[in-house]
Length: 253
Ligand SMILES: Nc1ncnc2c1ncn2[C@@H]1O[C@H](COP(=O)(O)OP(=O)(O)OP(=O)(O)O)[C@@H](O)[C@H]1O
Ligand SMILES: [Mg+2]
Image (cartoon, rainbow, N blue to C red):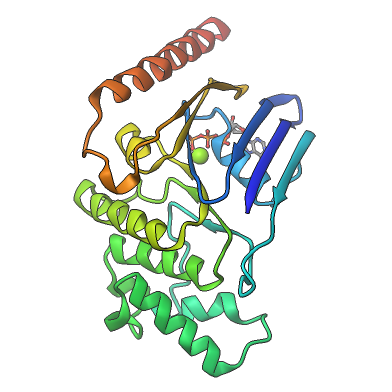
């Protein structure tokens, strides 16, 4: 499925958070969104996932989800959002509960997503027994269990140490290579965006607008660990926004 955002603005009381956002995620494309803190990235993701309504503009999906899709738009959060009183397996079964599928099918789905996220041995463990990286694997497994058409990820690796996030980034790239899901991926980490994004959308400071869009043609699996030139280009854009935002805050006080 494709996701199309057209002229979306969002206001909270008198605060304009997002101003006239246009962006498209094509079928099977990972679109990374970067931008200064507070520019409205998480807000935009919530609008895309239908958790909130835009103040103006439209968000549409095009195309149909896979036949066995249980939830077309599915979130993966930064803080893993696992229920501490449920085991790994039962954190995953939670998202299958309201669907008319047999217990046998549910178990098959759970086994399959545990295997795809290298968690098969940990199905009976409790969240407190898992490392951060494993917890986020459960978060990813739970998202995959509903076979989403579009994955909405809000800084999914930012709570992890750099080695663990590197491993999970590669896991996500492998998963994408097999399943070719469409995704919106918010990150603060420029090298992460350059590794996993087919398109990088740079947002301005608040009110968030699309400042620049960069397409990266190279296949995800063939990318270098770093692309210093592109990182520098993106960083210069972000730095301008951050410095301007700081000046604005300074002049208000
Ligand atoms: N429900 C809400 N009510 C009022 N203001 C809100 C609400 N949600 C977000 N905001 C405000 O909207 C702005 C954007 O917030 P948002 O969390 O989308 O930014 P962000 O780009 O995700 O920031 P960060 O990079 O720090 O995660 C902030 O000023 C925030 O205080
Ligand atoms: Mg955010």
